[in-house]
Image (cartoon, rainbow, N blue to C red; front, side, top):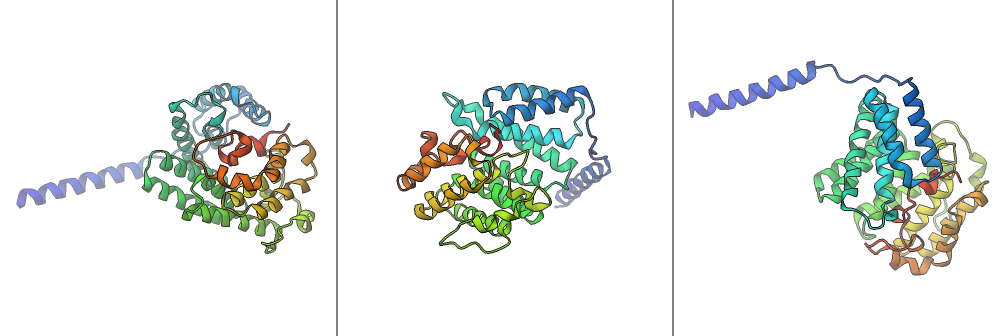
Length: 318
């Protein structure tokens, strides 16, 4: 008994020493990058994303990784690496065949978004994407604790920037079974996004966003509701995904009404994925069963997140 007590005291002491040592060690501090390599890497990242060029992600990854090794204290570079890796796995349907190693992308995404949050905890987007990567990793590896951890990370991010993170958090849940608790919550989050962006409770039976188009802005938290340089077709992409979630939920008639809101955007006619949306309007009833399938089908009959265009639907400039 005496030996057991001594052992317990030693274990507690060692744990306390470890904790004190960790707390006494300086944490990473943010340092912006100002080098030619960092500038080249950033330009390559945006060029790759805005061209929707999935095939050249590896080159953008190479340059950003080199820039991050040059300065691993830049939160922006960390976040862009995180986004590249989450883009890679989200649009995995473009891979023929899809390699099993694609799952490593979510591990890397989580690592870099975790770094970004550590270096700049003031940006709720980083926290939201970290939560999304935790949710995805938990689902892929059947780790329920990780999924729960990701869920509450997303909830914290929502409190900081609801217009942005209600959408992105719910988007990640769109791949879950339609009758699951978290899919239903993700769908509710899309309605909450609409209400916040409209500064009103949008009519659920006749959800036209036309009365609210005058609220378009590039300033403040509401900028997440509209198109921007970062996401030139964010508005259209939002309604494409929300329509998909409603169709998957069986409410294909309301889904059609939501899809049609995308056409209210000023630059809808230039959107590279308008034909994908218009085909969904035609096939909405059929897609109730198609969207519920676990296997990835054609882009026209697969929910946006798994379609192969889950990121570029908002971010591809043309």
